[in-house]
Length: 308
Image (cartoon, rainbow, N blue to C red):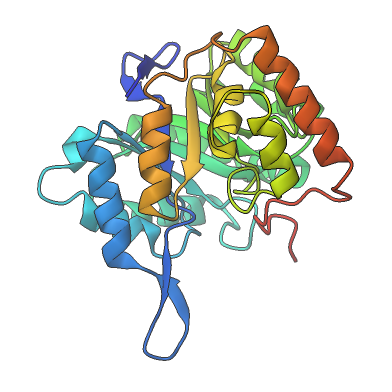
C-alpha cells in the first residue's frame, strides 16, 4: 500500500481510502434489504490488516458509522483515520444547534472522542448559501477548538465556479470531489482539482468508478477494446489508474461492496503511481471514451443525489 501526506498536515494516510457507502447487503427477517454487518466488519478488518488506514462514512449512510465502530473495536481505532460528514444540505440541519447535535451523535455512533476529518456533506449552490446563512463555518472552528474534530473539509456536487468560491472562503484541510475518466469536466472536474491542489488543500477523489459503472458489468465490446490494447487489466484497474496518475491527487476513495473488490483495490494501489501512464495508455482512454459516448445518452452513478 502506498502512503502519502496531506499538504499542510503532518499525517500519513493510505493512498486508497475505503468508502462505507456501498457496504454489502443482505435481507433481514422481514425481507428488507439491510447492510450485511458481519461481512462489512470482516472487510474493514481485512483492509486495516492490509495497510488501509483511512475510512470514509457519513451521517446518512445507514448504519455504516456504527458498523465501522464495531469493526475498529479492540484497538484498531487508534490505527486509522476516520472521515465522516454532516448532512448540511437536507432537513437535518436547520441551525447551529443541529450541527452540534449531529456531531455529538456521530461521535457516539463511532464511540470516539474525536473525528479526524469532518466534512460538510455534498455542498452545492443552495447548501453553500445555507452554510453561510447559519454560520456553520464558525461551528467548524468551534469544533476544532474543542478538539472534537481535527481537520475540516467538504464534499462537493456542483459546477467549478461554485467550487472555487467555496475553496476561497475558508482554510479547508481537505476537499472531496467526483472525478473519473468519463467526467474530467463534470462538476469540479480536473480544473477544480488542480485549483484545489494549488491552494495546498488535500485532494480526495470520489466516484473513480462512476458509481461502479466503470468497474462492474462493463459491456463486452468495451472490455474487448480495453484488452485490444495488449495490456491486460480489469476495467476497474484502468479507471483507478487514470485518477491516480494525477500528481495533484492525494487520496482515492472507493465504496466497496465485496471482498473481491477490496482485494483488487488494495492490489492496484500498491503501484498505481502518479505520472506512470504511458502515452500509449493515454490514447487507450480516448478510444474507450469514444466508444462510451456512442452508447450512453445520460450519465448516472446511482448516487441519488439528484432526488427528490
